[in-house]
Length: 139
Image (cartoon, rainbow, N blue to C red; front, side, top):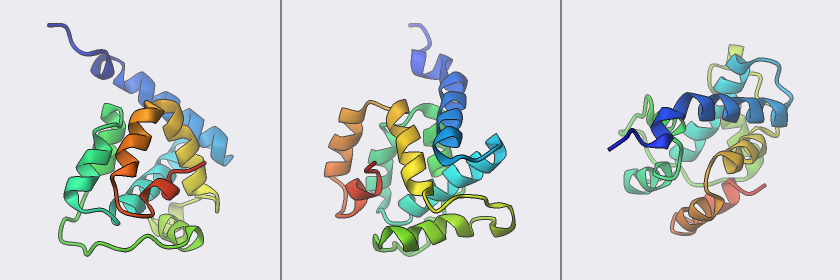
């Protein structure tokens, strides 16, 4: 069997995702964009049980999936979904002195994510997650 396309094209897909997120957010570098994306992923992940988080990760391209689960503190308490402004402040708190995530960070990452995944599969997974999950990724 050949290497699945998702893996052989993983770097290209990841770089395109970062470009899309940078464009949506107005950030100027891929480093700024990476921190914003990491903050959004961590903020979302913090609100899911492990089983639900893995289910969500299953629709992500390989490198986004890896970023989503990277440095996961499984002992951290699960937080409730809150209003967008509160969760955005949480995104912006990651590496605060080096974080340039705009107030639209969650929306901007959602725009880029929806370009990088099968939207129908994403929406199907989100529909089975706790209340607030689907709204988090709405654009």
